[in-house]
Length: 315
Image 1 (cartoon, one colour):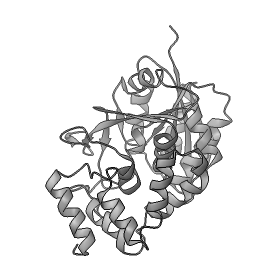
Image 2 (cartoon, helix red, strand yellow; image 1 turned 120 degrees about the horizontal axis):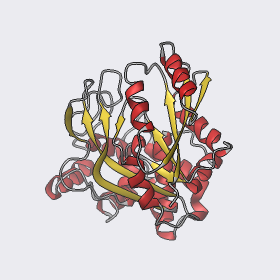
Image 3 (cartoon, helix red, strand yellow; image 1 turned 30 degrees about the vertical axis):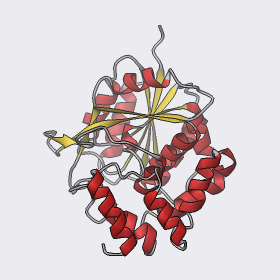
Image 4 (tube, one colour; image 1 turned 90 degrees about the vertical axis):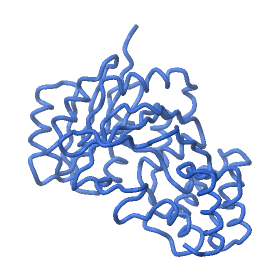
């Protein structure tokens, strides 16, 4: 049986320190025909030389050196490149420049995606093992029981790690036709697949997520990011104060404007209530007590306390 062909999309920027280890792990994927499309976002270190060397040695690597547009726009540009690429891939994957993939990462995803209806956008994500700059294991990204992802949680808490995502051609095409302007590439793709197709999450770690001083999650503590609000504070801000840097309400409004006619009636109602929650007491109450919002990273008592704190404005 022919191995599925996967086109991996990677954006690089000043990533010389860890890039080679990540490239080697992608090229060593088992059970798939892997191709790699890399867009450099204006690196000023030795990243481009490393990529040029690898591309000269591996025919399955295509490297593009481009101007700096930021990593979100860079990934959107990669999606466009993939749509018009001569590579006829079965599936696609996002990749960071500093992780390490386990050899079965892509094959595991492809086995799952092969069971799905390809006329719909389908996405596979997985857990990861966090490691430090030297590759020493720290902890699972999702610790404890397998998290539950309901519709409301997707709106409030966001998405899974973009570097865990493997998806089909339909998801790629929808993304390219409706590029986001208010949110990250992975969050937008997750919404597309969650509300219009399917998302499968594997609780097993399939790659090593590296935490270091230049990494977005380098200072991840207790469910929050340094410089980014915790999940509890994020809910509070969404409901009661000015929009946070990542504006979930406006992002939901943008998604609804693009895809309202494709949503189920129940999901239309959910979006309609969510995007007016700053101004509507009724919508706040609906969000806090709807079965769609279960706050999966907290136990039942903490979840109840969170809801009352939000209503009372006591955070």
